[in-house]
Each structure stands twice: as structure tokens, then as C-alpha cells.
Length: 352
Image (cartoon, rainbow, N blue to C red; front, side, top):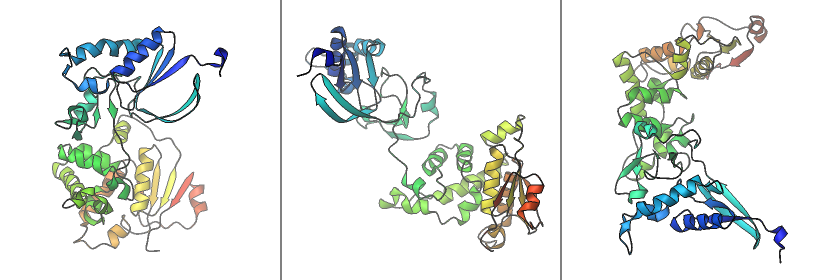
């Protein structure tokens, strides 16, 4: 038997429903510190979903709200939401409990609960709180009086289409944005990983579509076609290519001075140049041919990939501040180092 001196003066309550909340408040009144564990983003349990309670037919939220406030404001109750118990050992008075805290993907200390994120979110999913009779956004608050009052995102892993993409573009994200008519935002999301939406929309073998779960029902989402659509839409609208980083640079952001040389202007070299430029590095691309693009330019026929599409996307990369030197052969790495380049990438392509 444990002595009183060996006992721990705290209690773990598993489950944040009405019973768990009342037990926590009673334990605090008895002098214990309480850890209240709930696997969902908010406490309240099933009672929060009810309109009336048996047998008094009272409003369930009217009865429960004071307890929600009391639990949230009590300094001796530590709320552990999105948390599950994975192990327990020990004996009465001195249990050791292992828990797993799942990410909420929203900083509780910074979220004000204003709901602007849900208004902007393009993704809708069935609302479990309303028994899937209505939809909610992917970022959500379970109910209006939820405690904690911060929003949360249920992220259950990586979508198959994103896993199937060689460069891990958030396919589900830009498809949802296109469905909402937010074409420029969809393009900005694509360009975070891929500066060639128009090109890949035409010649990519789209492994994302192979992995698309919709294909088990009828046909996969036409991901490549949607990528091509938004790229062509941008050109037809004559919109300026933009992104968060490029917008900052237009406002006076300077390069950091650490020069990078890239040998080869194929898709690998240009993608690296694009990403480095947005990260603040001055980049110079050296190409021995008279045109940039590598095998995209000289290996794919025009009827599959028009030359003007290639040039449009190369021009967009050059607009980020990348310097391109055509008809230039690099004889040695030492010659580049002597010119002040601190890093060199060799992207000589597939036709070596």
C-alpha cells in the first residue's frame, strides 16, 4: 500500500462530456488538480448536440453552458483536447498515464474565434455535430459555445493524390479552390511547388489521377486538365504572375547577396532558380543552347507542348529576378567560383 506521502494530488478525468465536466469541478472543490482529457477539439460531449434533455425538457445548452465556463476558467483544471490515452500503469494513488496529443493545426493562444478562416476555406465536409445532415468547412469550431473557442482542422493524413505527385503539390487544395472559382489562389498554391502549371497541365503523366479515390466510383478527377485550365485562364485574363514572395520583393525586398549559379535551364534548373529567387538568392542560369527549357523545348513536339506556353512560364520565372545567360558554355566550376558564386547547381538534363 502507498503512503499518503507517495500519493499524487491530481486526478485524470477521461472524457469531456457533461459527466466529465461535473466530475472535474467536484474534484477541484475537493482540493485536487484535474487533467481533463477529451479526444475531440472541444468538451461538451453528446449533450451539446441535444436540443432538450430528459426528463425536464430543459434546453441542454442552457444547463451545460455554466459548466463549460466554469471548467474553462478554473486554473486547477487543465484541458487536454484532441488527446487520447494510449497507456496506463501503476496503482491507486500513483498511476502513470501515457497520452497522445493530436495536432489541432490552429494555435489556441492566437485564435480569436472570429471565423474568418472558415469563411475563406474552400473545402466542405459532412458536419458530424449535426449528424452529417449539413456540411461544415474543413477548418471549424464544433459548435458556437465550444470550449476551447479556437477553430481546428481534422487532418487525417496525406491525400492519395498529393502522395502520388512526384513534387507533393497539394492537389486537393487547388482543386477545391478551382471549384470555388478562386483561380488565382489555385495558381498561387500550385506555384509554391511547381512553376510550370501550363506545361505540366499538358504533358504530365498525372500519377495523381491514378491514385485518385474517385476513380473507384467512376472516374478520377481530371487534375491535369484543371491545372491546364487555370494556367490558360491566367494568360487569357492577362493577369500579372504573382505570389506572396514576389509581391514582397516588389515592395523593396532585396536579395541577400549570396549568389547561386545553375548550369542548365531545363525543368530542374529553372525550378531551382525559381525557388531560390523567391527565397532571396540572386540566381544566374547558364544555358549552352540558344533557347531555355531543356528537353521541354527541344525534346517535345509543338503539337504536344506549344512553344509559346513554354516561353510564358519561363518569362514568369525570369520575372522573379532570375538572370538567364544563353549560348554560354561553362568550362569549369572554378571559373564560376572566381566570379563570386557561393553555390553551384549542375542541372545538365537528360540529353547528356
